[in-house]
Length: 547
Image (tube, rainbow, N blue to C red; front, top):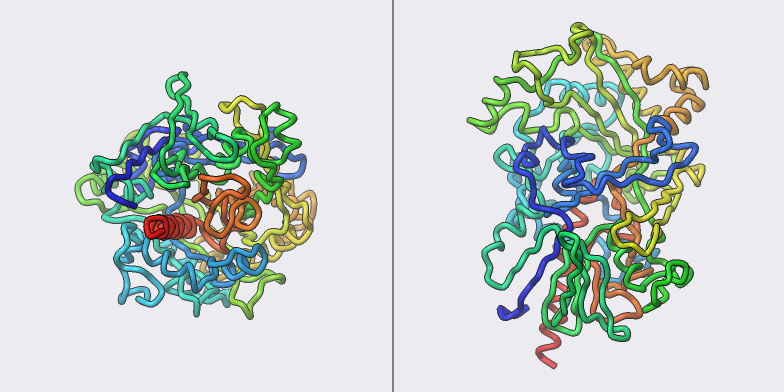
């Protein structure tokens, strides 16, 4: 891209709140309308039952940096078989593991190469710092010890292709005790460029076309509608530059298809229903909605007290030294990858992941050390949860328009548990969790037991850990991960160079193009998509100049 090009970035939300950089506060901005779209799925009568008739909660970043400002910061690339299957199943030429690996490397500046991880599996010169959080609680290491006792591998690097299975303390997007979002890593260093304009609180409502060629975008800011003519490509993030391509759409797996539909690109029956002029009949826009799906199990630790982790001492340690509990996400930084009965060991593609939640650095009301969380239960045991996640669920959902009003949120139908294999995967994950819970480490050292506040309803369905009990827990305490993708997928909505089929001048660069999520946390893969997309854009520019 030549230096004379100008870029306009339109962001629906505002700048990152300063406290969002504190790793220990990673949950604090969920359900905050200033930074979260606060989306929920359409209610199903058999999932997320603990949330009543509200549907499943899907936190999504409405902020510069998107959901990288809200997520748990875990760094994982997925597995070779994931990307090879994009090619095999979706004709995504150029997106095999061997072809995308260099773009993972370009994003990453791994700070523990040679001490924890191997250089051949990581990049060291990218803009995004990757390393362990500065603090790990003893409970996290005891989870690893329990995994060993249960017969599971414990590994140092979940991104090493030779150790695809196992439990670990994960590396994360962070440096010097603070979160790194994509905005902080990529946009801030470029923010003083004269050819870059960033407009916040500007929600893109549709693309403008002349025939099948994009010519601009419409956005709403402070209640006023604005039109921008594009001279070269367009993000909601929307960016512009000078080529036949005029738009790069990077609004995420849930908002990118909404913008396409509002622009007249999508299933014709949907467009006709909402009186939207048809620009391109693309039946798969908004379809193929994928997400990782799990079950939560809740426990009490009788040998640990439910006290607040964050007090004046911890806050001072963070503010003065960038040390202590606030520099991490508690035991959430521990994870594991294993196989269900459907997992493909020959291709080293684990299809189950495990997460552990609590204790979090949440505020002490008085500032005193080890303040009880509840004044009414000063001696209550510590509450924690374990989650088993299906990484290759068979159920496929969709999203569609609620109305033609662009400020109305879309309708999300994830169709969880439509395929019976998904429940079986979670039953397999539950048996792995049971093996960890029943180790000497947890039984004797921590005094673990199931939390009756959560289990009483499902114990009526069957004995603890029975298939009936696990199915009840999965429907009652469903754990939908915030890993949505596939709604503008390679081979279905965009071609291998990320250009939207049947129109000119618009590409998509976000999680919506991934036909299914990698078997692991997707943030690294989303960044890879952007890096590869930009590389292709530059190649096309060079070809345009030559010709």
